[in-house]
Image (cartoon, rainbow, N blue to C red):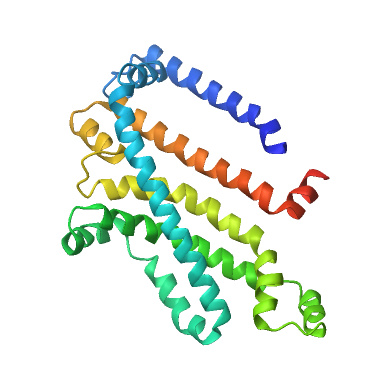
Length: 254
């Protein structure tokens, strides 16, 4: 796999970054509360892993739930807008406007309307996840080759057959592009939603750490968010390679 064969370069770059970071902190004697060294951050993660893992698993469950709901709504929205053109003309601008509302401003309103339970948190993640899937899917549906449409029409295919046998399969690469974007957004959406008043989660852990000037714990939370996002992205890539075989075969032959 080309992605894995090139990953050593990324690992090498990260290693050099951490070495440089560690050196600067030690040479300049930067206080740990201001900028902790990578060694201090990894030590903190290892020593208090049992406590942090509770917050990590809470964010993981919330991210997966919100991602599943958001992508399902996004894909369903894209299918409806594509199959019913007059709805797309009416609703598509509203979808774009919905992304201009800052989530950090909308979040307190969701708490007022729905309380401190899981519902407002899932709504936040859904809002950040559904839009990339909807836009990418719509673009994929429109990019179906015209000659294939013409061929199916000559074969007597109806509108439903056009969509499920041609347009939807042709849009799979674009759909997976939207899924990969949403997968990375879902973790950050979960963290933001946990600032609303959750009992556990990386967002809660980060808030408590920053209020007590435990900068090393803040960086532990940041690294965890980055790793979760990368894992989600990698999982979508692996699924894509199994589902969109004609695309991945063409890439491997290059």
